[in-house]
Amino acid sequence: MIEFTGLRPILWTENLDETIGFYMHVLGFTLMARNDEWEWASLRKDEVHIMISQPNKHEKNHGIGFTGSFYFNVNHVDDLWEDLKTKADVCYEIETFEWGMREFAIYDNNGYILQFGEPVDNIGNTE
Image (cartoon, rainbow, N blue to C red; front, side, top):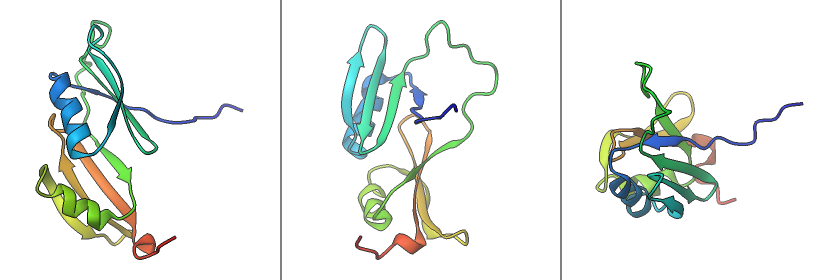
């Protein structure tokens, strides 16, 4: 049986250094690898892996572009909100939604929407 074992998005950027800096200094990611010739980098925070790249000649825009957001499941979402609300451009402030998630969203330096959420049932649990 075929099994999907992970998803590692590649975010396109015009400024590799600025984007690496945002993810490292604002969100606390670690730079795992970088290749300036390829204009590419790999970053990680806990179990989340992302890659940053400038588009190359094989990657053509088919007219759609990225139109969604990246949703991070986190613990201690209120603490993360307190840390990030003055460090990044806020898309929407922290709120508890009827579907049982407490979440907020910011924009990264490229304008990508980064959402952070925690199930309401987990908030206050110390496990």
